[in-house]
Length: 375
Image 1 (cartoon, rainbow, N blue to C red):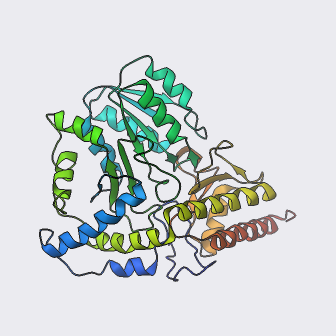
Image 2 (image 1 turned 180 degrees about the horizontal axis):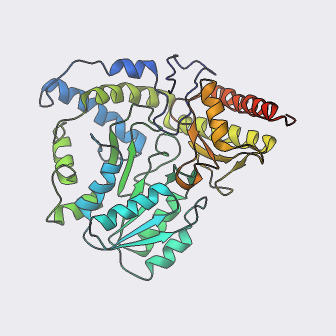
Image 3 (image 1 turned 135 degrees about the horizontal axis):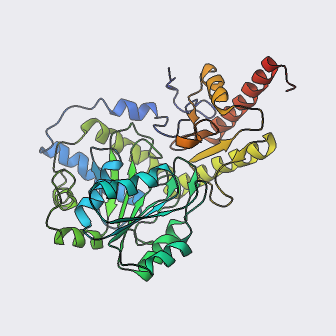
């Protein structure tokens, strides 16, 4: 059983450190109970209009930003089905970037997979070299790879793509947007997407994304774009402060409230708080024998995958923390048995991270005591 933290989020009180879904403020949970509305009513258009006025500020775009009642994975598919007919280059350095490449293949697109080791950031120079070999319609990249805690240099990758090809840049910012710097317009990103349940600190079920004029031009030229995921329809309805299909109304109420909170904190201040949480974990890890799985210089500010000290079993450590009423994150995929992941994103504070790390010390001491080893 997981333990949902119902506190108001006072410093040091959050006990929920899953890499997503994350802890959600009670005020946001309360917003889910708003009244039912027709999504073609003026009241809905007022709600959606408020969201449209705020959401682009987090995406750092002068264009509209959108919502879709799917997980972020839905926008992976939306970007491909709406904009792409030619070859796709998928930059893969973890489980989720691998899945985006797999999606392109499953859709029947010609997809080249450029693989890097788990734990390694995607190097822009390798992307430049690959682009010289072939003409691509789009490049897919995951900014913060949730499975490994690796943050790639999205600005540098996008720059290389824009300067060396006509390919669209599709960026998964699922565990980066609202937690670290993502500049949709300044970096020349064509589709940027995230999920509600990550650094936005909302319940799951809503995809949030922005689309460039360049991507929309490509979409309008494409004959078959499907229906539910058609970006042309999404933008046309957004111009009327509506969604093409029935939206998830409770999550839109929650988003409206949470956007006020994010903008009141300040987007740059939010980035700084996440960077402070990352440093807290880095410093603690160095002192207590843990190793950050991501290579140096590529540690995500929102999720950290840690290798415990020799003699400490990662799965047993997670079990011990759960028994202490902490919601934890295990290693992902092939790292499940060897790593622990800490989700430190959304509205989590540094003091709560410190309390969670202290719990690791207590759990390890108890484990060693039971095993008869010195603490």
